Length: 105
Ligand code: F3S
Ligand code: F3S
Image (cartoon, rainbow, N blue to C red):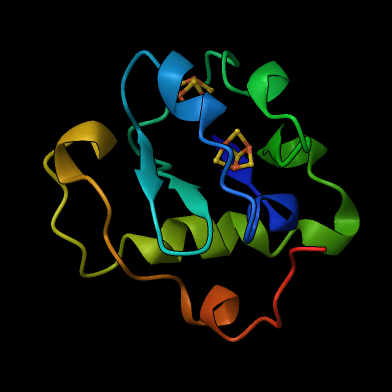
């Protein structure tokens, strides 16, 4: 699966949302998350992100590798209609992300 990592936090450019053919990218409050069971590994989102937050899970820089779990765990207990566009803004974040200091410069 592809994974969204730290650079997305407090940026949320959302260019990735426009290109995902299966709408498996979901809007949290401070970042977006890729549903690991819905992502088809097409790679379309990766070059669209202006801050290079998106990587294939095995290519994620070491310091951000915990974001594979952060993306997956975000969906625990979240009702998912199988489409981030249909789900809309969730208004929540993974606890790890919620507790990060403000990332915007
Ligand atoms: Fe975030 Fe980049 Fe998408 S900043 S919202 S992963 S385009
Ligand atoms: Fe979607 Fe393809 Fe990225 S399925 S999340 S655009 S790798």
